[in-house]
View (cartoon, rainbow, N blue to C red):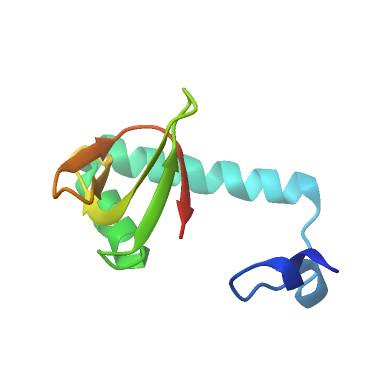
Length: 107
């Protein structure tokens, strides 16, 4: 069984749909994009980046699982981004936990 057939969400193989860029060109493009966003952050602050991220994020209330570096797992609902860009997770008891680092998975 192929990996995409075992996933619980639709998936595709980008390499089958588009021609991948040459690694050196990809890195040049990635570095240019990063530099542009870094310059925007330095000149405008985090709010424009935060707003753009929220525009593209899953809707509030999306169920997430956060795997922290210490091995703990926290499950809750996406509750937006804090002013500093940290993930806000609404727990089952109504508490909102601010997550600064961890691996985030959709449930």
